[in-house]
Image (tube, rainbow, N blue to C red; front, side):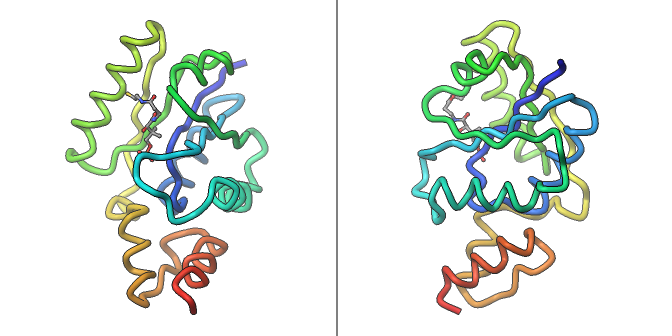
Length: 159
Ligand code: PNS
């Protein structure tokens, strides 16, 4: 069974994340979405909220499994028997850090490869940080994030 791992903070998931996961799911038998429990930046949403938002947004994709992890991604990948990571790239600015992480992961776990998927142009400007900022200042995030996420952002902003 061909498996791939799609890791991230997903704080919150955006349409860009959903697109990359959906596209990954077309090429692999199973895509494990790995939600980091304790990201380095303090998250706006709890782990349970981030998992539940992803589950709602990806309910239409049968071969996606949403899991959480803590610690090193390479250890989680090994435990789950996955040797391929999928990451989305929006712009050249993403590439430097993503390449560094891919190479560190491969150094820690030889044989663990990372495949990069280019973001759809429609979502290339999106980031979790930006949608949080838009929502915080009263802007609409409709059409940028899954509907449940938009609602959660509004509630978080007290609207
Ligand atoms: O959504 P993000 O913030 O781009 O996700 C980054 C993530 C969670 C994939 C990355 O920080 C990660 O893998 N963290 C786990 C700790 C780890 O393995 N660090 C070494 C990576 S080179």
